[in-house]
Image (cartoon, rainbow, N blue to C red; front, side):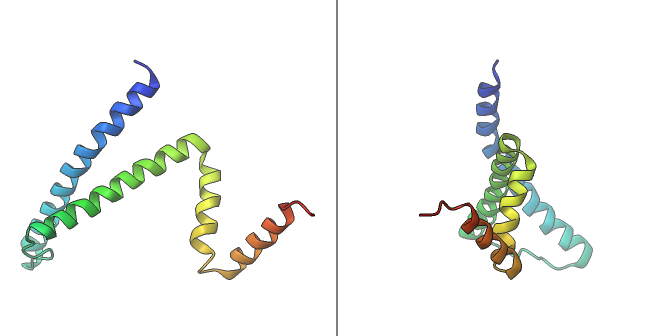
Length: 110
């Protein structure tokens, strides 16, 4: 079995496992909060509430899988630099300013 085929099967298996993990996490948080504090943190969600909880946790798991594939493909340093500049540029202005200077420096002059 080739690496591509194995990666394809892994991706296909990730979604049902992420959904099962999300159900387990919600149930565990609910039961733990009830037993330790006597307070239901999650409450009594209806069908739409369950769908939102499960889909949010599942989307986070799939996002992490995708990020792991990108890191494997391109290397950690490249991804780290890209995420650092995107995440911190609105928060930390010198990053944004230095990025603009760097971007202008690599542009061809006309």
